[in-house]
Length: 255
Image 1 (cartoon, helix red, strand yellow):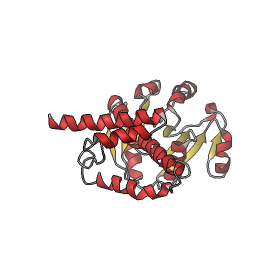
Image 2 (cartoon, one colour; image 1 turned 45 degrees about the vertical axis):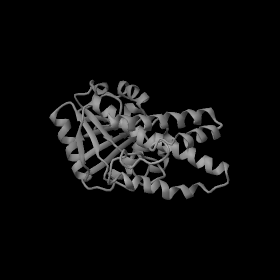
Image 3 (cartoon, helix red, strand yellow; image 1 turned 120 degrees about the horizontal axis):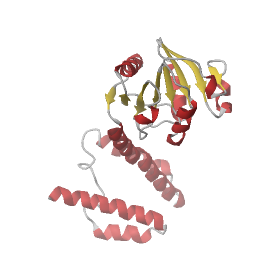
Image 4 (tube, one colour; image 1 turned 180 degrees about the vertical axis):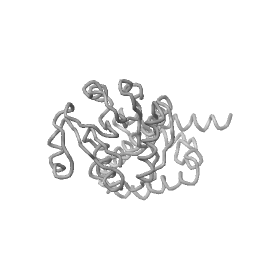
């Protein structure tokens, strides 16, 4: 049995709470959050700590807070016998060095409290300071039937950056596209088949191979017209930057 204490009740911490509950051999022993109201509905299921000083002993302490808050949590949390980990994609493991056993468990996925994960085959990127911490994380991932890859802090930060491009930035482009549709009285949900087909293509071929559009064929006239009809200077810059990036990618292929 792995006894776990979760620190943080945001999207990631809440996901782990619900996810870990589904598997034998795991027990959520307690949960701490600075926002106690967010944990009110869980009081009947798990011990809620109103102070980080009251956190009891456990096998694993999972720090699932935003990067800016990790240092503060580490400073307040007393040294523990168990393994202390954070779930950040960009924060170095070294921030946990005060603890004898520590590591990183970074899920390469996007989480929202009100959305159920559809594709659960995403990998966990892990890093540990010793074999004891490694074995515990390996055991944990085995119990939840998840795959992992051991990656150091520097490479993990670059993978996190890749995730920002394909998820966060892409989602913002969806927002821009949806807003353009709304402004022109066109139902934005009619873009969804196009979005789904775009994602489907890269399951079989590389994004570069399936790139389409005016920039991919260097259609200067359409590019000029698009830039001309975009009134918002920020959107104009986004369009120009991405267009130039595609053009440069095509030029590199010719070299």
